[in-house]
Length: 388
Image (cartoon, rainbow, N blue to C red; front, top):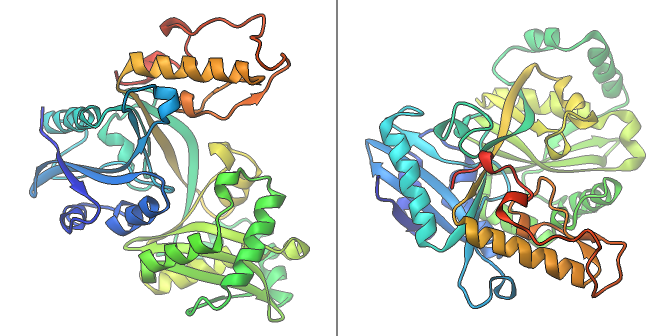
């Protein structure tokens, strides 16, 4: 088993390792420092190997609530908002070194008192392959598809990939006067925030997606030129604003806000088509549009899929490192939920002991009649899907 080198986000060696391998902005120290400063966890990079052959995995180390863990000092592992997972150089998925490196990183997690680990793998880098080529094995869970648009091909070739109806819709939207431009100075940030908040309310987004203006300013501060604000306007009025993360080969749609009074003009169609051209002119390979809500092939996914047939598997990693402690925390969560009149229904949420609580029909302070203490055989997850 390879022994992991553990790096702090302030260590210049973080980016020195990362830049040797295929990677994205989400892997960089600056993006992890941004998440750490927001209180999402302590940013860490674990590296196994040498500069010529290595596997490196950036992550956030979180403290588990002391009330839930009792007197024990317990942590878990999570990922930054975006797409990360491991990066590697000089090796192949499934070879002896990779297996040894993965084992070494998981042992490092256990040495940090982590009882579980969650990862969002990068769809374009296919970083889930470093754990398994088969979704559903070795802790890799499939979460639907994401869509990317090839920015390298010509306008003529791109338009041929669009359906006739989509071409007509874009042309009609442009005739109304819609156009997209870059806000180099971010002077329209207040308008972006207004539209973003409106969009989050309209879509009934969870509280975790209601980012503040301070959050956006810190994102821009940390990422500098890699965070780009683009606005689609109609007669001088911003009707759609989107922050894109641009780095090396790709541009990712990160956050967006649209004026509900102008949705009928199809500003999203114009922005995607405009940004595709803008990205291609500047040497980016692709626009990554993301997927549907919750990884589902819903109306949002179908809208994005109208622009490209390039689809990518979006996978997450879910690892239980200390099964006994994990079970105990789930039981504590279940009992406290029942005592407060709530219901512990983690469904597909991982780790289950952090799942939001739902309303219960029983009286506060009592247990539902069908309440059964959790046992290892009755936990809300498929035990075959995780590394122990």
